[in-house]
Length: 123
Image (cartoon, rainbow, N blue to C red; front, side, top):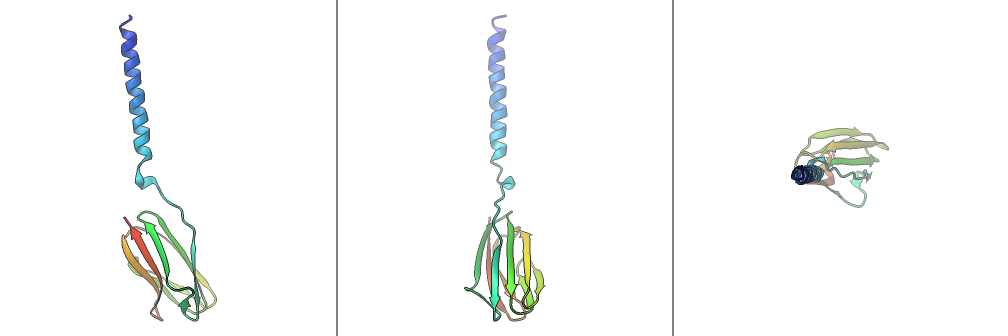
């Protein structure tokens, strides 16, 4: 009976170590880690982005979020992701989509051919 007690203790220690290792490894899964960023607002005055072209950087899997407040009517086109939304003069339009494509992309006021945003999506 004395020999069974050390074996049980060693077995229990190995089982606990395996469970702890499993928890630690599953907690480091980068796919489950998402970063929440605020919404960037791009103001358009006289058909041009106030302060110049906005620069946004996200990692793949994060939510890209930005808003365009415009004093002119146009279509805002997020190239690469091929998302297009109309904005009216004095109005705003919001974009919210997952960063699934890596690279550097531009958003522009399509009718004016005016770049308003450069989006970088890292791996």
